Image 1 (cartoon, rainbow, N blue to C red):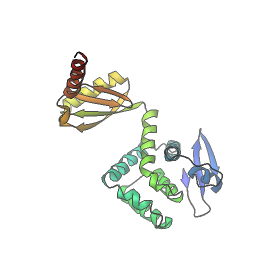
Image 2: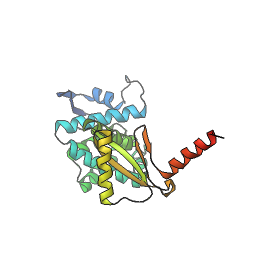
Image 3: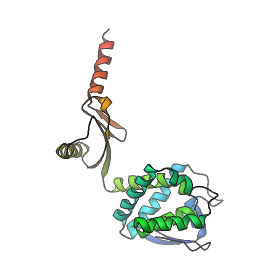
Image 4: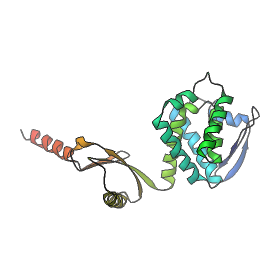
Length: 220
């Protein structure tokens, strides 16, 4: 769990089942603001924050609640990306940002660990990475809960029965639980295009026609 108290910032983080009390120097290491830390890529910084959030939530047995919060926040950001732009504006002082985040957290009824994370991200000037941090948190959650994120393209929305059957088949294929995100794409003409990580299963009519065209050209 993270706790903030002005410049005398202390953070508590559950790491490998050990509670470590950290001074501001360690906080500088966590956020990458200390002078002794080498510059890292945004992806690595986002992952570190996400992992710290996951471990803090796990220590409080609040992982599922924080996961729910992450989903809510990601949806809000996807609908209005200007929110992150505003929160990362250096002309807006940290105290006001934290007050705004606290008001938003209260309105959304976010878990205490989520609220603490947002406060720490504001102190570390990492709100510009909020979307990436939340995505990394979800990726960590899925990995630890053996869940596969699957994207499915269809010509039209599936019925509840079709959705249930597809989910069952995909879980048998991937041998794990699946979380399906559907995208309606009339241009595939029919069938499905399933993507999971780097693996793609193209069973669409468009895909079949493209493969047939390739074969025919090869035979010319």
